[in-house]
Amino acid sequence: MDRCDGCGDCVEVCPEGAIQLVGGLAQINSELCTECEACVQACPSGAIKVARPIAVREEPVAAVAERPRPSALGTLAGAALTFIGSQTLPRAANAIVGALDRWLSGKLAAESRRVAPSEGKPSGRRHRRRGGRE
Ligand code: SF4
Ligand code: SF4
Image (cartoon, rainbow, N blue to C red; front, side, top):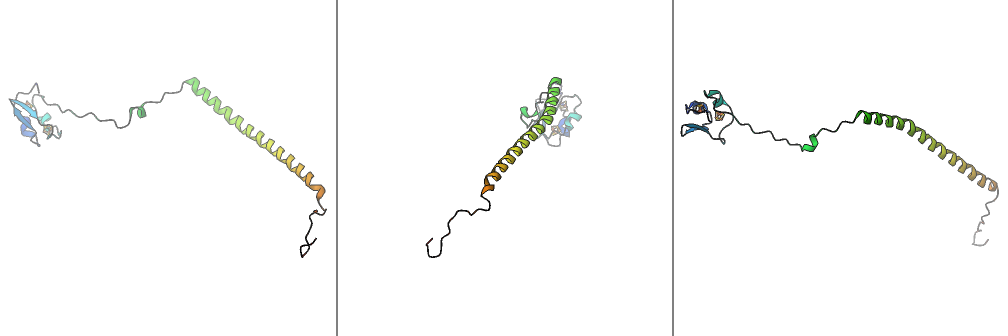
């Protein structure tokens, strides 16, 4: 308000009655002011400036911080590892499945050899006659 000469134009245009002259200088009541800027337009001396509150950033600073970009070497290494992984993992899985398959087949064959000799023979289990005697 250094440039104010007390002409009173701003007091006339303020729709909120927020401005009054005190000691020959305009004084704005910030509790009534709605920042319509009518007084800013009306002041011939350019003495009024509207101070807008600084927008408050709601998200934490860490959340908006830019992630570090990978270097060209890092990108190349990542691509190479992806390629190796895509080639190696299926082969390893196939090898494991094959080994399990062979092991299971061997187990089944051994089991069938062990069971085969007893086929067709009586089980050896005694049957009780009626009355409880054998
Ligand atoms: S900006 Fe504020 S003081 Fe100026 S005319 Fe509008 S309400 Fe009144
Ligand atoms: S219009 Fe400008 S110069 Fe006139 S009283 Fe208001 S602030 Fe001061």
